[in-house]
Amino acid sequence: MSRIAVLGAGPAGLACARGLLAAGHAVTIYEADDRPGGMSAHFDFDGLDIERFYHFICTPDHALITLLRELGIEDRLLWQRGTMGYFYRGEVHEWGHPLALLRFPHLSWLSKLRYAVHTWLSINVRNWPGLDDLDAMPWVQRWVGRQAFEVLWRPLFDLKFFEYAQPLSAAWIRSRIQRLGKSRKSIFEEQLGVLRGGSRVLLDRLVEDIEARGGTLRLSCPAREIAIEDGRVRGVRTDAGFEEFDAVASTMPIPHLVEIVPSMPEALRERYAKLDNIGAICVLFKLRRPLSKYFWLNTTDPDIPVPGVIEYSNLQPLSESVVYVPYYLPGRHPRFEQSDASLVETSYEVLARINPELHPDDVLATRVSRLRYAQPICPPGFPDRLPPIATAVEGLFVADTSWYYPEDRSISESVALGARIAGTVEAETGTPHRTD
Picture (cartoon, helix red, strand yellow):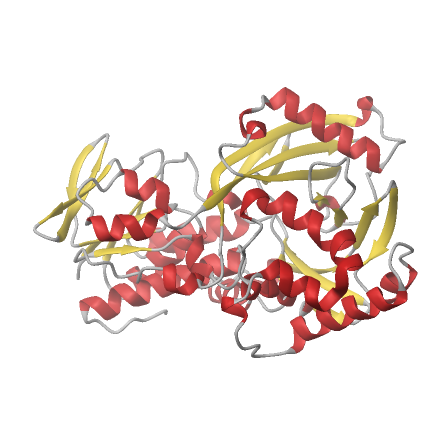
């Protein structure tokens, strides 16, 4: 049995700890926040227990669905019809199925056909060779044509990635289309899932399982240093002191990790420095009335500074209407430093533009959540940039959301990565990995 520290108590860290405990190791999890969950952590929103950042489940999310079954909470999974709209040039249009595309008035028939063909191929072609090395923007434009690209795609690239929009890996963008495209009951109906009670149901059950297996979770206890001596891990230093470990498995964002490993080999530090991230801000509204009938409302209107709004209460049954307004921004962007009050004002203007009948008195509560490192940036050739999970430092294992590639961020990918890290630790220590 080895003594292993896991850094980060998001779903990836918790899944990693669970796998290591099942293999017989002694595990301590360190988390800087006062609660587990990372981006899926809950908070009290004016009496409503809800996540800081929105999440949903797709039918291809096999790692998460399997974990729910193992934890005995699969019955908390609720499948709902996913409703989608498109706000463009001051109007809300239905979206997300073939008839909606045919009725959309701002594209020619040829553009609609090309858009549909590209979407179908992105969803259904199992192996599309060469996408890892292609730049996504010209790849998409080549398929859908200039008109559909300018109307439907370019604003999304610009608002989600800013100066990182080109080049991006076509394989990474394709995986986003594929995950949602495969989560359907039919070509006319998207099927999305939520947990009754939210992600907290999963987090609480994971923590219970970890503690039942003998694991230790230390909240509000950030790792200040990973001590390395003679090329191997010696332990973790926190504000409470130093603790020896045989290995450390880190799921924290790479930029934070680099700060706490002062003796990291320079070659490894240089590789990590090439992994870029952007941040995320979610402005959350509790409203007296629904904003729209859609869960997901894309926006490519030039006067709106976000790529869409998420009316979470149109997927998760809630007593009031709850809307997330997400911003994806480089950390140096001026809006990242905007005050909460200013962000709420800007975001309310977005909602009022979408629904002119909305009144300030309809806003019951607001909350702003920020995360400096939320979204990896994956350019062409990205797999070659990723160092192995097992680093050149003996006993140090590292991966964050960049290692989801080519998949996008989701709780399911977090769970899969956590199991993968645990498996790597087991392979390196010579003990067969078990998941029971």
